[in-house]
Image (cartoon, rainbow, N blue to C red; front, top):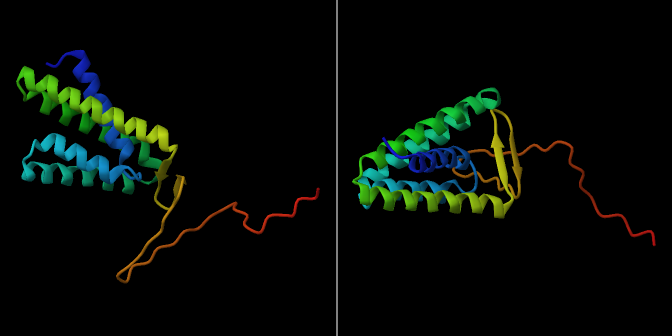
Length: 159
């Protein structure tokens, strides 16, 4: 069984995965998580990327009513994966990989805090604090509907 500090790192990492999925930080973060698990083995990295993509898909398809429950399940699932991986290492490697994981989580947390951006999505909605770029190609369609938005020219200054 891992010591309490390592369990806390694994829990924080599980939360970071669930929170990053679907945000603008996801692509970079998922790649870093896959490299952490893969330890240079591209096949292992590919497997982890598939699991990460399944996580993002599960959260995206959860719908507004099931999103929190899905997020909790994904956090717990990733926490378990991190714990299992750390437990499989010898003590020296374990400390090194726990430190790397802690650093990875810290960087992700700082990125979110510095960007001031959040995102959430539901079955028919997305809320984004920051820029939203909508793109479609190859015969697909993309749309954005905005509510309670007023656009126009600024009024002249009465003074």
